[in-house]
Image (cartoon, rainbow, N blue to C red):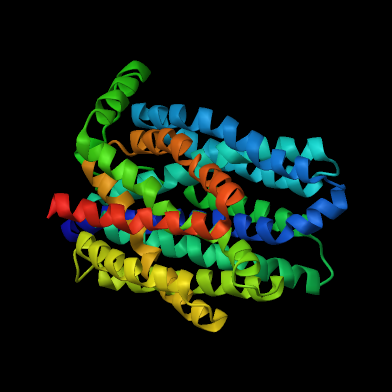
Length: 394
């Protein structure tokens, strides 16, 4: 009986881990479906390009102002309410998307969805780090893999719905129902079970939480990981946003072939996330980070200079595979530098993201002034920064 009681918290952690990973899959399913459905949504709701831009800019700005506060409240004992409440808002937002028939209705759904995702999904990630602090790198790898799978499945699900004579509305409705199911699974579970680190005890009040966040920003280690997370994104999401444009405008292939290039990038990223899980059980994360940065530093210039599009696609696949673990390892290091303060980690990530969010704008300005090819060379700042990190940390 004693052994059974001892193993019970461990089983709770396993169940919570599965639920949190399912939440990440669900969030990325929404992103994948949305990315594929935007042309359909634009046509059905008769949206202009300006309105499409506003659908992203306004909710993102509002969410960026809300989520730092959410992270602090999570660390002062409101985590359970925020995750479950965020999940309910997440489901309502998806329902409103499916029922939207004009720009304002869809904008309202997006404004609700963005901070709801922060509460429901980002805090689930943070809590996953707290319930098993000794397995943070491995769990971050699982989280990244879950997200990659969900993102890749989203367009396929939409295509299947259309094949069955359904619309993007019914797809969002099904995702809302799946969200309710995920909330039900989590409802009676302890958000931080007994196996969580003793350092995960909540701080006393909001003022104390703000003070902790300010103190963390004064620490060189924390600033290093925050900076590297933003710079590494140059070879992750930011490269992904420019890929199709690069292949059409610079490599000279058509839009359909450019879409295939993005698909290769995403698919190899899924393989990289999958391979990273067993790899981190054998290799130190920072050692892999150094090695992959060296290889990327050699491959990326070849990608830009070799004129043959087929060879570019092969190199792109290797790049997607190699850098897929960067976010996982760096984010795991940030959590390790702030044990028991995962909510404040979320706060600092959002604050850093306000600055990092200017990088695509800067690249766009360079591309407009000097050409896209020059802007693409600037992405080499990512592997160079990672190599400098390893020189400092040994």
